[in-house]
Image (cartoon, rainbow, N blue to C red):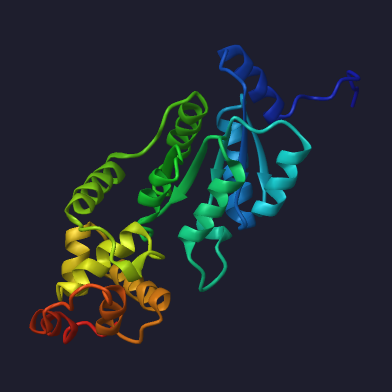
Length: 257
């Protein structure tokens, strides 16, 4: 068969031509995701859908740091902090590491329904967006463009949760003397432990899942070196007056963890 001497354009190349014709601004984006399947699928999918969105990928924060040191920073970072979190480790700690790694570079984090506190901590750290894993590529593409252009992207359920968190925080008293090492959310949980509230009530008041409330209780016990809820409250408020024993016993009898 005769050949023209020119290589046939690939589908990607043809798509790039269309993208240029559409006149969309070129944006350099970095996807950080330890899981190969989601990293490659998301990167390729976004690149094919929006060919002016130039995706690079990194499998770890260390690899991302090396890429940043070697060249110009991207306009936006999309980070799957759950995939970067080792087993039995705290995803919020990974989020803080990621925020420190990218500094002023706008960052969007992937979030699913199980990570109730991730959007709250992301907002506190100055992260510019939370992208639910339930959305499609079209929404992901526009979210990255919005954040790269200086905007923020927090879907309405997350905004509602942020409002609930702020309202709950306004009602919380100052941190106890022994709880200085706790996060703001843990201090809110600790105050409710002092009031003898169950995990279910704590979850309802703070707008989180009951399982997340249990995780916070365990974190408080570890941080304060306490073996149970009563001891945690005693250590946290050791320089203040003790809580009402009758109030405490009403809640602690229901929730042991």
